[in-house]
Length: 193
Picture 1 (cartoon, helix red, strand yellow):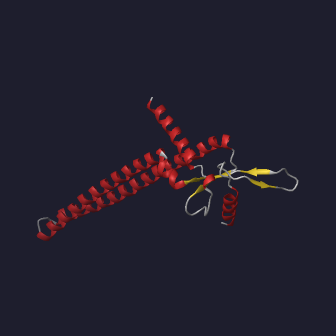
Picture 2: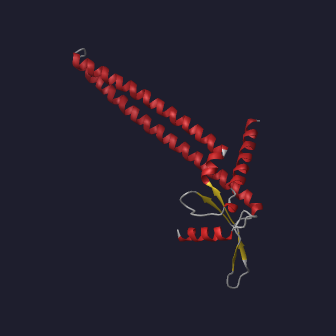
Picture 3: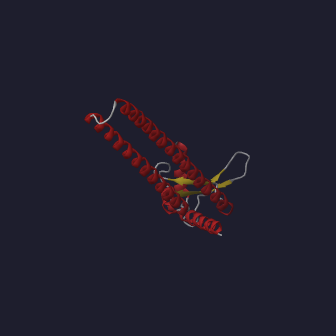
């Protein structure tokens, strides 16, 4: 935490409005002077404007809603079957043998519903994990390519809880968003061909 606060203080104090980086001179004993360039990306803005993230979020939300609808429909059908069974038992419109068989079937259906719910939740978690991994890979790959010409020593992520203060001139968020979206649109066009 102290390193982050110190880095923020250095970054804020040293950021030049003409460059989107921080140049800090550091002298090592027996070594040449080395310039450190620092920039940051606002994560909230990135997630709000990166089309790949928005598309994945929409797909995941549709999947979550589909799972929820499936589970709710099956749960309602099971609930109705249980209510019908209880009504038959209370009115005496079912034999002991039929009641035992129906009760076993309802328990089996309840277990199947729980199993389905667990399987769908696991499947959704894996899919979400895959999207998150792809998102991080996409951003990491873009930043590696972007930084070949930008030459930053550090590109930090800025969110409300990890950098307390940063100079606006060090913000490369818009450049990163534009580059990521351009790259994503290019990949989409290739996939369509």
